[in-house]
Length: 384
Image 1 (tube, rainbow, N blue to C red):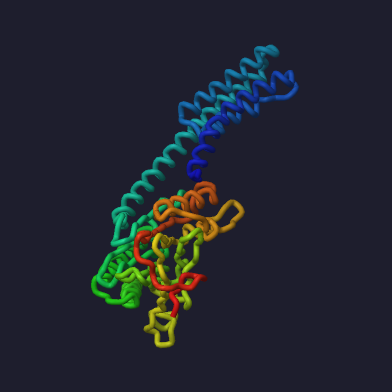
Image 2 (cartoon, rainbow, N blue to C red):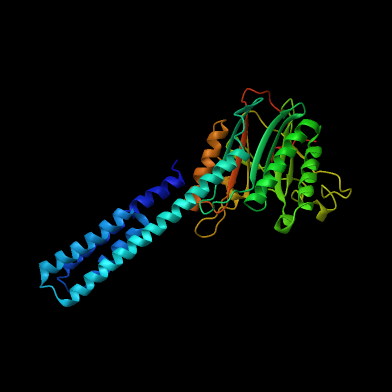
């Protein structure tokens, strides 16, 4: 399976040959048309085209080569004229302009690369890689920074083994930069604390909601409009039941036996930080209930959680990426394989660049684990 980023690099390599192609094309056309058609525009375009795709030396070399080709063509066909002198002077000037453009583009690219490297380092410090194994689960995670962005995003994931089961979180905080970093740190710290001291999944969600609301109440400016979509999941200590609370986030997918099934919530819930709009932590009448859906996680199945950088990734026509058909085929019981397949597919879909940061988190239950309780064939929801 080819990676979309590799396709982009291949296209970039082909573009590096474009200046040379213009020079060769100008030379061949001029000879074929016996000077009945001026190929000077092609020669003039070569150094300008070289500026964004070649180095400074390559750009200057292309300009010199354009002058040499022009002089050669004039020498083969006729005596030089005053007009030729003007044309070649213009070509020299274009080469100088192209060299200056190349220097500026190189400086801008270096600054952007440095910003992205700094953002990536901070991101790794805030969001370290999860452990490879947690209980009977094999764990994998990916974080992809949007190519057009250098700011730190608000995507996060975490997993903790507790006496109450294995708890997982994936969330997407509104915004980027320092505001997002503060919110990510707050949610990760609150989730870690809740995993230690909260005995049930609704309690974990309530603590995350309280922390998000507390940060918003103390904030100013645009931070007062912050919120976070999230999926909080809990796998029972005996692996018999998967409990999921979805807070305005894309539903996770259960990948098993060649099918990808969205684990949609029965009751919609607002994102973290927006409970005041619904009267409480949940959307239930009493305002305190947190809707939790229960599913089975079969042995060998993979649970895939992701942020909207994946499902809202668009192709050139504006069509959103759909994970379900892409994951509806046989996969080995390995979350790394599943996530690599998702990223390959989404990069092909978008042409190699994401429009927004994307986090993916997946766990696979060991295939030798005892079979879970009976579940419905439709969506894996546990039978009542």
